[in-house]
Image 1 (spheres, rainbow, N blue to C red):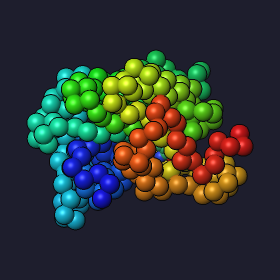
Image 2: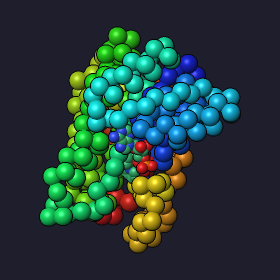
Image 3: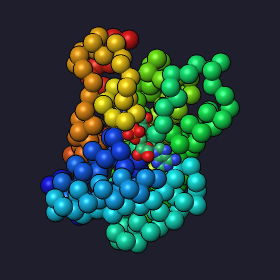
Image 4: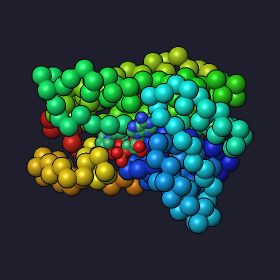
Length: 245
Ligand code: NAD
C-alpha cells in the first residue's frame, strides 16, 4: 500500500492509461479523483474501485476550459480534503497528419488538450501543493517526446512541449517540495491506439504493444516516496521503441 493517505487527481482518468492508473492508485490506498469529461465512464470506474473496497469520486471537467478546471479542482479538494498527487493524462492524437494536412482548428484543439490543459490544471492545483510544501506531478508525454513518426506534426509538437513544461515546473518548484516528472509511454493498447496496426511494433525490443497497467506501474513509482530523488525526469516505458530510432 504505497499511497495510503494520499489523494490523487487523475486527469483523463475515464479511459485507457488514466483508468488503469486510477485503479492501481486506489489499490495502493489512495483516495482517487477520476477526472474527465465522460461521466458515465467515470461513474463506472468509481464503482469498480469502490466495489473492490477502494475510495474514489468522479470529477467532471474539460481541461480546455479554465472555469471547468477551477470548479472541478475546488470541488474535488473540498470533497477529499486536499490533493497530493496530480496525474496530467488527458490527451488526443492527430491521426499522423503532417503540417500540410493540419488545419488551424486541429492544431488549436490538440494543443488546448495536450498542452494548455496540463497548464490549466497544474496552475489550479499548485497553490494547494505550495501551501503544504509538498506535492507530486506526473505529466504524460510519449515516444513523441523524443522522436518523430509516432504522431503527426501537432501531436509530436505537443509531446515535446509537455517535456519542457515538466522541466520548468521542476526547476521552479522542486525546492519548494514539489516533485515533477514525465512518463513517456510507447505504443500502448488503449482506445487511442485502437485499430492502428503499427508494423513498427515488431521491430522494437519488446516486440509487442504495452498494456495500460504497465504505465500505471510506472506512475505508481513516480507517485510514491520511492522516487523522491527524481526531478524533471522523462521515464520511458516504451518497450524500447526509442532506442534504435
Ligand atoms: P484515451 O483516449 O483512452 O484517453 C485519453 C483521455 O483524455 C480520455 O480519458 C479522454 O476523455 C481525456 N480527454 C481528452 N480530451 C479531454 C478534455 N478536453 N478534457 C478532459 N479530458 C479529456 O487514450 P490513452 O492512450 O489512455 O491516452 C492517455 C495519454 O497517454 C494521452 O496524453 C496520450 O497522448 C498519451 N499516450 C498514449 C499512448 C498510447 O499508445 N496509448 C502513447 C503515448 C502517450
